[in-house]
Image (cartoon, rainbow, N blue to C red; front, side, top):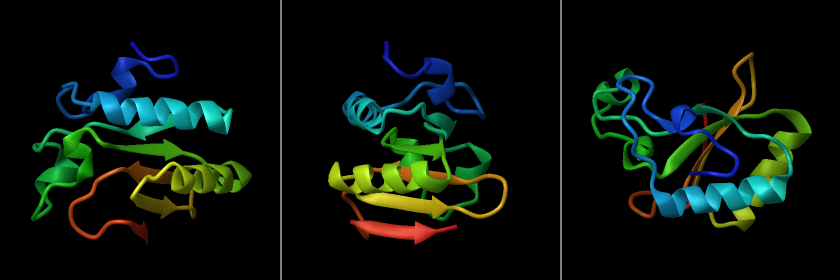
Length: 119
């Protein structure tokens, strides 16, 4: 189905539902191609009952299938951030301290976009 990703790494970790948007995944595949290093997915699609979504007043971008979290650090994080901005990703979350370093990427248009935040 995808060149660089397995379906099971993109499914909801709560209920195993599939829900990634095909257009979004085409952008991610292109980004992966340009970055030229493997993407380790820590979170992709989430159902609205997923524990991280269920506690929110409004569900997040992951429930739309248009968001992904990629484990990355150091110079690869810098490269991925640069490429993601050039590719037009509109939501970028940065977690670059501690042991679970990642970048959140989405292409949502609703709400405060474009936007960058830190965890």
